[in-house]
Structures are given as structure tokens and as C-alpha cells.
Image (cartoon, one colour):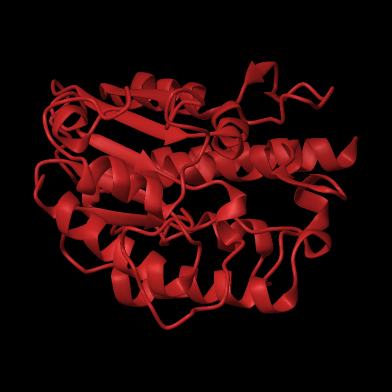
Length: 287
């Protein structure tokens, strides 16, 4: 009970700091402009979106109010007279493409098969950027099952390896930069429980996340990072068991969702308003 109260107060504090900090920033938000945001995800993202694990019996509420991502954005709009419209969709769908959203799959749909037509019923960037001002993309936690390099990097391979991931991410970066009027937010790859991986594999996933943050991400462009992995691992290489659905399931639970949904919203709003200059990669307000 005390733990729930603590996290509720923590979330309220985050909202207060976000609103106060942005209100005093002196930034012209162009209040009449509608900003359309799309969050592309599967189940891990849905848990953060809702602010709770759908399999949990715990109701995710903050003093009687739902506290998922849409509710935070709606509250922010009301207080700040902004017009940020956020939507979500499963990407790619289970059929016909398949329930796979790893680096290869974004590359396959957006780069290799990019253009003005759907690819296997999935929208390309040429289609999405005409509809949305901000596009958020993430991978599911099996993306952290990174195999050893074999010394033959192949951008067209769906083998999960650092050498292939880096080629695919570089191709994606080049493609996303073609749409300079659209802002992209990329989640760092979700972690696995220690019981569901090995130290060697986890270290490779950790190296990939660090590479994305320190080498792949360029300053002063239209691509930004939200460091989900750092929040769920607390600086370790494994998903913390206290944040997992159960000991054998690497989906995040309600405890983590309630804790970090406000930070996700902080980061989205700050990227829209200041190109991310007032938040850390994890979404904490820079005082």
C-alpha cells in the first residue's frame, strides 16, 4: 500500500515538474498548431502506453485517474493549451508481415521496400510522414537476443547480430533524415531477465544500446533517443526482476509502467518543444 502511494506521489511530482518547467521555459509552443504523434510498438510498448500491465489485477490510477501516456498528454494539453495528438498502432501487424519489429524489419519495410505503397500491408515512411509530425519506434525484448558476429555483415539478413544491427540502423538513420520535417524518437532495445538470457548475450545488447546513444545518434538532427533500457535495468545489463511480469517473462510490469510512463511523456513533449534540450535521455527534467 505504501509503495503504491509512493509511486503515485512520484508520478504527480514528475507531472508537476514537467508542466512547471515547460511553462517557464520561454518557448513559443505555437499553441494553435496541431502536432500529430504516432507510437509504433508491440506488447512491451502497450504496457507503457497504458501505464499498466494488462495481465495485472492492479488498477493503474493516480488519485482516481488513469495514468497512461494518452492521459498524461491530454492533461498537459489542457494545462498548457497545446494540441498534441498521440496515437498508437501495432507495427508490424501479426499478419501478413509477422509479429517482428527488430532492426531488420524496420529496415525491410522502410528502406529496402520504401516508397509510396504499402509493403505487406505496412506503411512506409513515405506514407507515415505525410500523416504524422513525430514517429516513435521500438523493438520487443527478443531483439536483445544478439548472436555473435560471424564476420560477414549483411544489411539484408534478419540474423540478430551487432554487425547486422549496425548496418540496418545506419540505413534507417539515412532514410529518416530524408524526412527532416518529421521528428523520430527511438527507444533503446528492451532488456531480458537474467533467467532468460546469458551474460555474454546481455553484454552484446548493452553494447548495442550504448552504440546507439553514443555513436549512432547524431547531434542537431531530427532523430532522438528515449533510453528505456536504462530505466528498466537501472544501469545493469538485465531487466530488474522487480520490473518484470514474472520470473520467466521479460515484459515490464505495472510497477515499471507507472514509474516511467511520465518520463516517456516528458521526453516526447520536450523533443517537440525544445528538441530534447530540457530532458535527459531517460526523460528526467534537467534543472
